Image (cartoon, rainbow over all chains, first blue to last red; front, side):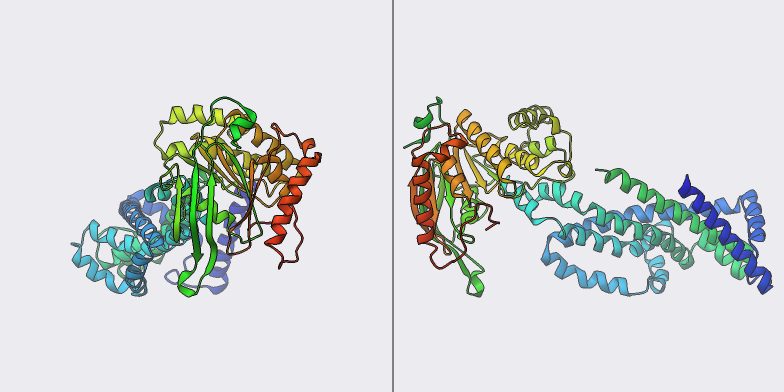
Length: 246
Length: 279
């Protein structure tokens, strides 16, 4: 309860600093709207159903993108961790792909993958791939060699070692990657929507910002993304605690 | 003298181990270190053999060879006439460290060899519980390794090595991390376990008194590259309680082992300590 209280208090302080900035600065609403203006705009956006309409699309993209990207990254990371050959062959491509700004590639990916939900899931999955794959590789490599030898002495096959030793011992590190990945998935969904979509919180940001000059609505969309990010991060932490409670 | 004739507890199980002119080097590409240089050893089925020698003489390497974890560079190792292969159920190995899997309960750690062999879960539980009973760990079945004392963890490791009832049991200084008193208790228990159910035991140790207290034969090794310097037959009756080590014959045998050690060890000035660290 004390932790909840601290969080609530810090949120109140945050709102007060925000409010104070608008009062002292005297900015117009389209530069920095006051918190109560954003709150009122959120209320209307919820009431009209526009916020949910866009959020639902973005949520779907995040869930699918994270599931596909994380699954692919963990499998790849296990292969990278277990085989020096695979790591030598693949890692230059993985690193190079990571260094290319996905923002620049997104419009092309959108065309390649047909411009629909699939394209957005692919973009989202690509953005989260790297941190999770690398974390998994590092985790697999950090397995205690004494335990590996113990399992070998019991005649464990390579797949048995992976399942019974390497993956469980890599889990804390893999979850570190998943925590980073899940917040990136939110960014990935928005970037993908910017490359071409008609619905989604990224689209709503664009409409509010460039179409309507409705800065309070843009803040509503940004706050919604922040809340979604916090919620998914919390979910990952929750699953992690459950799995690693030993 | 074979072990079971000494104490006569009925049927002996166990397989003979033959080490035939075995050599092992590490890092062969960059000059390399010769760990074992032509070891010959015949270990009788059902006998209790202690292997003793200075650090780096390849005692642990010898056990790895018999466990099939390491192929010999030259020569041949045979367990009952065939090459050892990990997981074939003929050899159990307990390491110097317990090496328990940290996220598994004691019971699941002990059951691990059965799980790898595809034994059904229900049978695994029953057999692992029995194995825990035998080493006095019944109450610790659901605890995690970090909740166990060093002695309990090592008991669990021995229970794991014994769960498949292997005819050959290899012990690599399993009690070296324990305090002297606990260690004595463990040696008594080990002897009891072996007398209840004889099998071939090869026991690596740094301690002369431990070797004499437990073994039928003490194999003394030379410093690197390891070779067999001398074999001392221990003709003390069993069971051997701790007091027996005050016996003149035991003292004589211990002196013989020490002499063999210092012969092969003349260049090293460090005195022999029972609690010495790992090879």
